Length: 320
Image 1 (cartoon, rainbow, N blue to C red):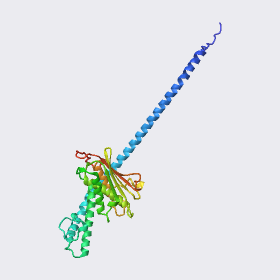
Image 2 (cartoon, rainbow, N blue to C red; image 1 turned 180 degrees about the vertical axis):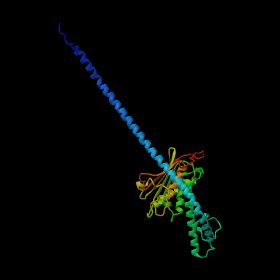
Image 3 (tube, rainbow, N blue to C red; image 1 turned 120 degrees about the vertical axis):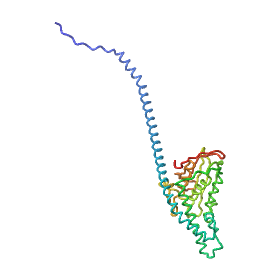
Image 4 (tube, rainbow, N blue to C red; image 1 turned 90 degrees about the horizontal axis):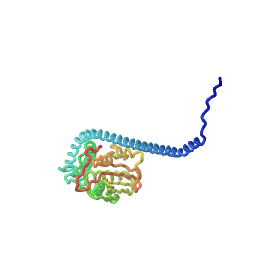
């Protein structure tokens, strides 16, 4: 019986094998290019997702800050109502005595402190005391009005507003409360068409910004302030610049908080009230991170532009 022989492997066709290798080698660059393209696409998608997440986190933080600010304003409103009730009762009595002392029958609010010189008061000291009483009562009453503005802001009384008159009116109000006047130190310039808004509230907001700029330059021989109003697209922008020391970066996030102040005799309500008025008009106010052209702080008030003689819609809830 013959022995079996082991099966032999089929012989490789060398030319065919070489052809297949060459085909793979030719296809390899295209495969690598495809892999590189897929990698770049994945990297771009990852970067886009990262940017979207960063933006979402930023919006979440801003929303949380707005909600926190709304909570603070709500708490302040409740407190303000109580404070106003408790303070106004004794103020009414003080006002009554001041009217009697000054020999006046009209409302003390209508009395210019500098003009109280009732001839019926012969005692010079008594007259001076009456003036001080009236001045103090009116100052406290103004603080109460500011407090109540946080708790229950009034609806806007809309009218056509001329920008230049608005700025000049605010500057005049500040000047009347400053010794010697500040008109020569305040430069105002408006370059915007007439618009719809609450003239009284906007004038108060600009006035507060100017007063803040003056307080920042307390002690300066020649304090300088520039107030500009211009239209930027769908917005009106008011910029108030000063030549003071500026606002430190660590304080910019708190400078608009109620009762926060860096001035020894400040109430911390002026800038906070500007923020409320800005929200009433659907806008905002901020302390710019850069210094102004005068070298000091730059505050920017923005709100939507609504042309004069046309209906305008503003948010009903200023805290949103």
